[in-house]
Image (cartoon, rainbow, N blue to C red; front, side, top):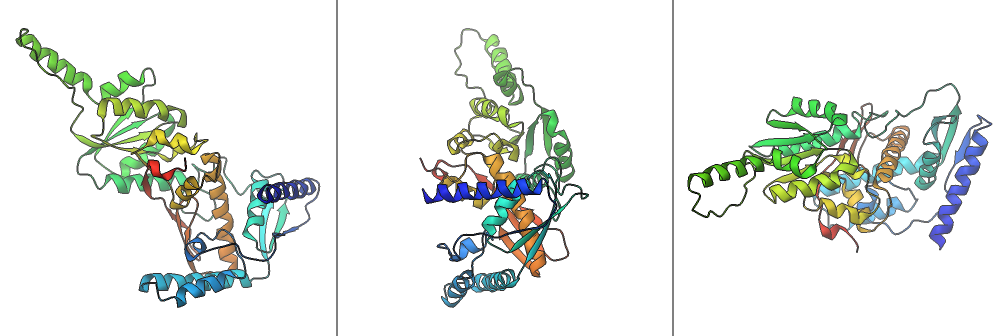
Length: 366
């Protein structure tokens, strides 16, 4: 009940602020009105950089003093402590937004959750800080878009296989296929035919070829009964799927029907964008998806409704955090972010690494 009250309070405050912004360009000062006490945290939670409380530095120091960390972990913890000290010691941060800008409401809510003294200034002349699609297009402070980073994750995964890789794609993702081809030479690409999933899967898995060969052999001796099990193609080990979110749910079962477990299925990040309930991810069980450790933790704890919405908020959250790190004078940081592992270096664009994770039933709290 308290959680619901806090959520409603955040929404109420946000709406009041946005209402005032629609008629005024005055600066706004946003800081959490929650009591200045830290919720239960451990060292691992600190690496997410999701919220900041005075007690955080003490928690990190206790982990350092515990003598349970190896040399690399100790080095990382000391850097983490230094970063938190810089972030918490700064008296005021400034974020500039455009009046009427898309995502303004979401950014104010994210600022509230950071629990930092952030001043928002509204610029009527400034262009929007965000592209039309914040998932497929690069946003400020990052080297590449989320989609581009997902392509890099797929590339690293397929380079581990010596055989060719079968790529199924629809036209809307053709540009990403071209990028993947520049990185990898052993691709067999097939444009998606949405007329019939079963027929299409049978064709690209070369089941039809196997059946024709069986019929030809049977015709040589019609009196002999042969046991026949159609065999899928043997020249590939991995199948990458680039489809719109709605098509995955029909395509993957069809591929499994004809190809069984002989292939490693790799889904593009677009497969997550139509997921409204954690159990829907069971359609992708035993296949790989570019998805962060942070997000799988939220799946286990059932902390979201729409994955696409959650990922969008993750992109906005990391955009906001990078400005905080810059203004705090942080020189380097490794953030266990919502979209992936974000590596920050001052005076350079931030890099994101998205792990390829296998979807398993034990990720879900049923």
